[in-house]
Image (cartoon, rainbow, N blue to C red; front, side, top):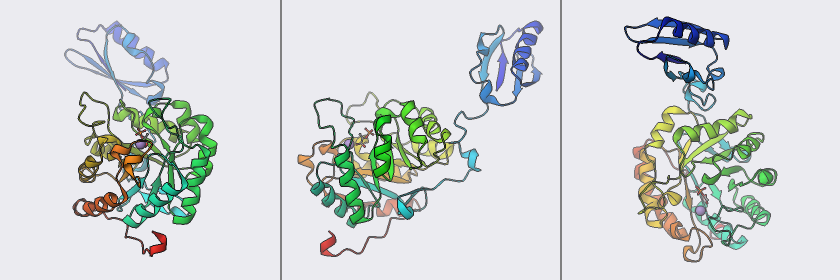
Length: 352
Ligand code: PEP
Ligand code: MN
């Protein structure tokens, strides 16, 4: 922590500031300039972070030196990016050279529609399945998801396709049951700062897909990841899904700049959700191209067998055919970014 004094600070004031910092267990290093005095505080910065030093007469500013997200910061692992392995025998890996593609419907609506979507997205090259069983809907009258029945459908389809499943947990009371079924737990944008939920999830050993809050800063997103990691669960993937701005032409504003900033700040993988960012099927491809170019480690895309009949987020969902063309259209961007896509599986008519 670096404390800078106001111009004209008195020696007596500097003494009081120094004594206060030393009383908190820190060593101090004082450097006197022509106008201001700089007091370097040497010790565990976390113990000083909450100390109200600005209240002391003569203090102008207090600046931390260390990042408050000490487990999420890149320095924690010596600057190396972390890989997050998802599913039994690490069926999918996020954060490596291969771009991770998660696809599936916004909500699991029935066994048939989820199964059909799963086989279609697998044939097109997706590596993981998404689907909501517990849905955070703006209206309490809108479809809320199938709950446990939805989780069971996802688990059955995982058994058939071999694809890990990603699904949202909305509440601390659901952590146990969602953790039993899911390969990766999703924390939705609306829950990014639900600190009790983050801490509960941190206690189980399941990878977590943490979506950026609607109005959350990059720092707040990293602090949310820190909540999970501080409880012992280090397998966190961050997701930029657009933030709320004054712009209404898109559902949210995809913060492309957040991708390189996060890659600079943290070792955690960063993926992008072009579906919720743009809110329209025709924006999924261009936003994905930009995300790949900016360094994203993966994409999570909504796909529905019949988007016009979807119970949630139909406008932004791709049909299976559109998803297949979309996957092919990624190739030049993936290559330009020095990444790869999962090789297409060998499919027979029965497995489609
Ligand atoms: C979702 O993934 O369907 C979802 C609700 O996302 P978000 O939390 O980003 O709005
Ligand atoms: Mn959705």
